[in-house]
Image 1 (tube, rainbow, N blue to C red):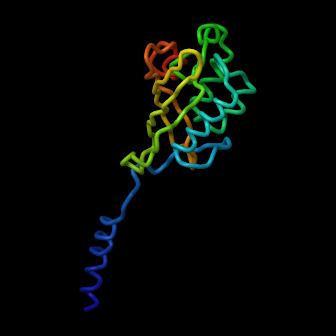
Image 2 (image 1 turned 180 degrees about the vertical axis):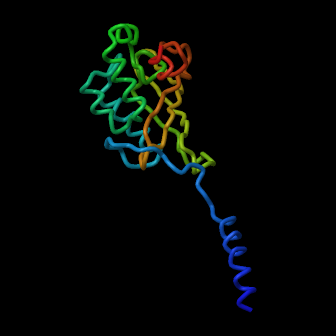
Image 3 (image 1 turned 90 degrees about the vertical axis):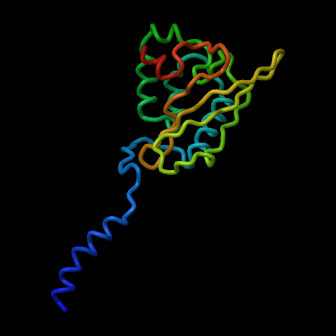
Length: 178
């Protein structure tokens, strides 16, 4: 009887290994900077709310970047820091760089991420409905790419989907890397 149990032990161990569920990704990377708590949609909405409260044109300066830091991925933050020190890039990036329309938005509504079927996703693109009040009201959609870093969700890129985007390249990251 002991021999039969000893023979079944490795088989039981093997079967238990087959039923263990592993996440799609094991390591989200590290993040040493502070972040905003919440899911991808709430962090994105908080970022756009900050932008609406304190609108800015062109590349963010060091003070603005410090305010944006908890919302931005490490990669996007470093790319923006590098671009801010490049006078050539600073001269070519005018208008609201976080929007496909140069004047920027006066309201923003980020799509709910609960409609995303893959809850193990490392990155999630979310549509953002933007509008601008004024003499000629405008409305458009852009897309914000949220990435999971460590335990945080952060803005990693903005894709310009609005009509006739004022910045070439299709996305903020593509434009900054030129």
